[in-house]
Amino acid sequence: MIMILYWSLPMILFILGLFCFVSNRKHLLSMLLSLEFIVLMLFFILFIYLNMLNYETYFSMMFLTFSVCEGALGLSILVSMIRTHGNDYFQSFSIM
Image 1: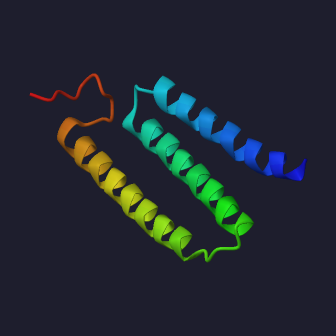
Image 2: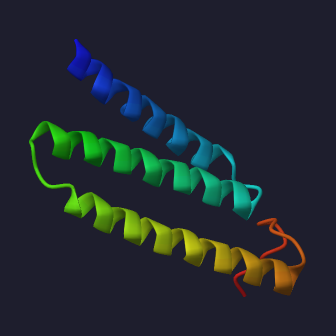
Image 3: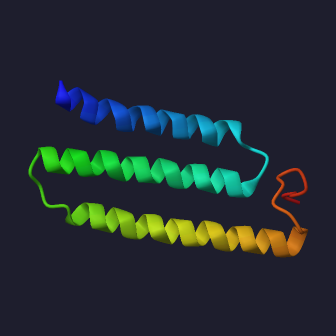
């Protein structure tokens, strides 16, 4: 019973994070926040899985390192977009 609770809560939160990512397509900042929430839930699932199998949590620290790099890259893209376009709306951003 406890194992089902350990797995169901992160999975539900992961699905809710995916839903927020798909539904919030107006601002870049809201999309970046929902991506960070998804990465945090993936880390939580990975941590539970590695603790259940009594493995080392070294890989989870590598995962956190790469997720921090991803967050810094997303913020730099956000700052660059605000400096060039003045806002973070996707409607004002054009590929061409």
